[in-house]
Amino acid sequence: MRRARMFIDLRQPTLVISGHWNPRIFGLDWVAQNLFQLAAGAAVEVGQVLAPDRRFPILLIDGVGVGCTTDRLELFATDDADDSLARVEAIAVRTLELLQHTPVFGFGANFTFMDAEVDAAIADALMTAERLEAHYRITDRAYQTSIALADDLVLNLLRHIGADGVQIAMNFHYGVVGAESARNAIQGALGRAKEQALKIMSELYHQDEFEIAKFGPAPTGEDSNVEI
Image (cartoon, rainbow, N blue to C red; front, side):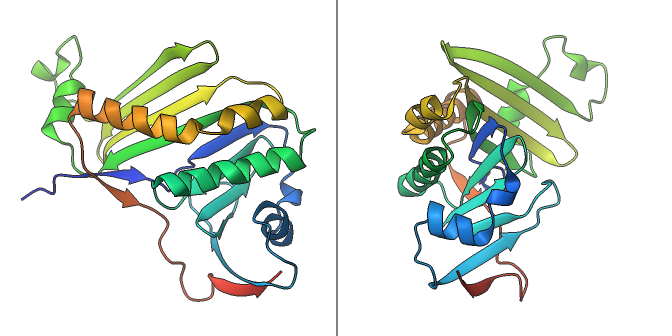
């Protein structure tokens, strides 16, 4: 019998801030002491993830993942509980306070749903208007729609069905400019995005129960207690 749940894929970043970033700043010591406000010399349990679809290592500390490139700061939650999302927001706000002169061009609150099996309700919802399925064997389908929710807020909704299953990705993009504007807009954004994402999954795709897909424990030697 098929399991009646999809996954919320937290291996994708929960919060992405676009801008001109300096990845060299985001070393372990700086991240631990400044973003997580851990005392120098403290022993900290740190995970480092080298995900195949990311260009940089992700540091995992206290339930939040941090990764940075020259144009994106990516923050990862390790579960979808409200306090975990609030912790991600707090790290983002602290980063923007400390690096207040960083040029920032917007941020996205992201929730991605996936499963290796395609529920019939989702397959039906993504039938093409042309009813191509009646004439051909469709092996891959992808749809992207941008929905204006407010003056500075756009929902980018991606739906994809292929050989690997189904993925429904929601990017709530805030087009705010500047670190201060982003800092003010981020607070509460993840909670609102989660509420709307779950509503969409329920109303459009009839999915109400979800498990969590997240980064698993690293192989021996990759997770460690280190002194900062």
